[in-house]
Image (tube, rainbow, N blue to C red; front, side, top):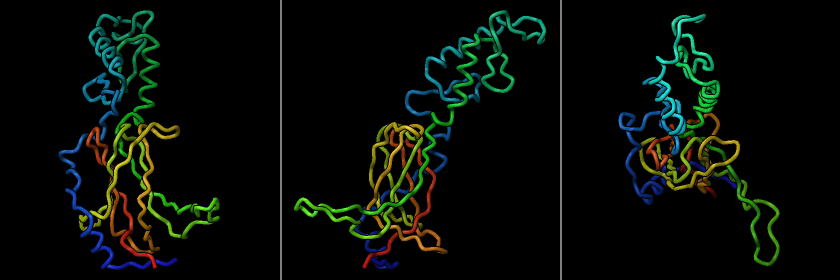
Length: 235
């Protein structure tokens, strides 16, 4: 099968699909370190936005309030920890004295920080249609055609509804849909794969004429734009 770019097809698609508002401006978007549902900023210091459970944040606040009672002058200066406690080290220079278990948990939280944010990562892959049931107990052994179609994939979203879009570079909507992000092994946060049914019109040496974006409905956070090429028709 062959396909060919055409301005008429692009125009038809733009006119037949509803026009949606442009993605939210960066100035009103949630911050990039927004936590997924179930997590909050630890705030071991005002700028500490590592995402942890509410219980850990509460404990951290208690540790901060008690820090003066756990310091003694000793081998490490006036902030030497009393016996049985160690520096928390939630960030460089964090010398609040806590239990060894609390320090270990702070290190674990730091290591998982990126996976607990609504980073809204989006990428594009392609797929081809599979065999078709002939209705008589048999099925075709090959795809109905050899045309690659676009699939939008995401991770680091909240578990729940995600809106997905493809816009022309002019801002006109080409396609939209919804998908439910779920917890899947190997991917951080909520992840998804959404088949669009739209033909991949990529041509070597030609830039994309459109871009894909996804919005995490729970937080309102948008993914970055991912370029694509669409609007061709098959013949």
